[in-house]
Length: 236
Length: 39
Image 1 (cartoon, each protein chain N blue to C red):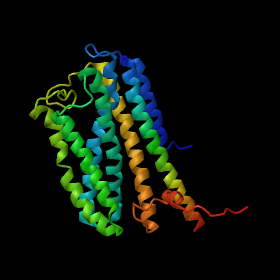
Image 2 (image 1 turned 120 degrees about the horizontal axis):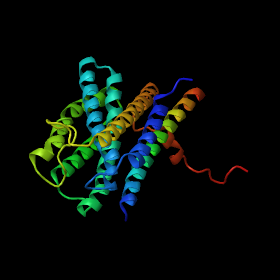
Image 3 (image 1 turned 30 degrees about the vertical axis):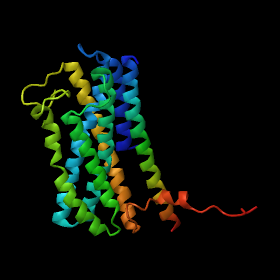
Image 4 (image 1 turned 120 degrees about the vertical axis):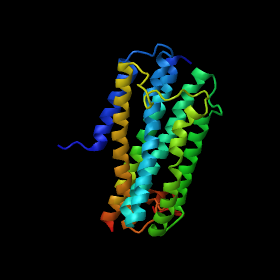
């Protein structure tokens, strides 16, 4: 039997939770709290990756006018919003015991929140058009412009020194992390990236089905059940 | 809350959110496939 990407992702992420939570040693400074890094960093990495895929899909659509690329851009943005939300949430859960506050107006935090809301706006824009061609061309322009935030978010910790720590792995000199911890982090990043690819693939397929059925993204087939009027009097 | 309490809170948030999102995608896809078969 052929393993599906979603099955592989499920096994990989669960194995990651086991290794990151119970196998690798705690951090010398932050102790067990640092284990949150193994879900926080992959979420932030996938936020970057997903919006880069949205850029690629948007540029490819503008060049080829093939809706396949538009669906890829939309699917990646939706999954990216989920991961950006998780990066923010896990950052807040980490911040409360370490910094003493859930939220602070640090450049990295604020810019990540802005990125989250801009891509929510991107998804809202996609839902505001019934015509797939119009939806694709308008959202492709936003998909290209919005990606400019990624380098600003990433380098914000270097440009404006705040509470958030500077990059540990993606930095010009060698990674400032011990080998077992780096191994667990890379394993986690790999597992969550497989999950990301599986989710984007599924979401793209769903969008293709919606387009083939002539429905816009706002017309969710499962939403119909919630607005079906109740039968008056019943049928006994 | 203890350190392990915060760690559990973070992991539960991540895995629960991703699980719910994955299941919702699968259900929407299945619902579409069923309605396609009925058409």
